[in-house]
Image 1 (cartoon, rainbow, N blue to C red):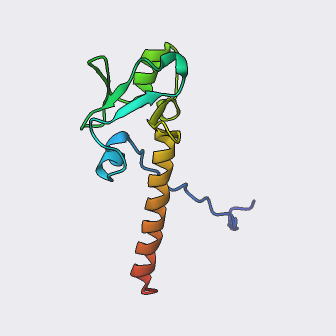
Image 2: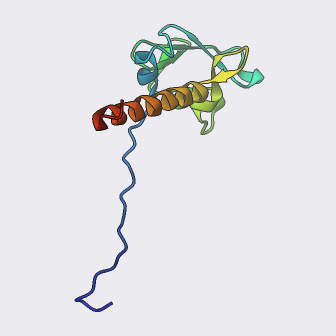
Length: 121
């Protein structure tokens, strides 16, 4: 393209996404410190994890910085802790399900905030 011409293409930057962690879900009241987190797989059912007040996960007295690091400890291989641990057994509800609910609620709240700023409400 000649130097005196400009492209109509605009490079949109992707929205920055904030990483959601267990502490965010505790702060939102969706998870409770001291609650049990149950492994999804029956072969690990004898190992129940505990959610700590600071968002860490404890198994057999050993704290882990994330659900995934706790899951790796149990499984012995890379494992997605959001999928692996159930916040509720019946009906089955994974940490990932809780995180999705949180993100959905945040999107609704953010949409409402934008409308308020524009004077639409």
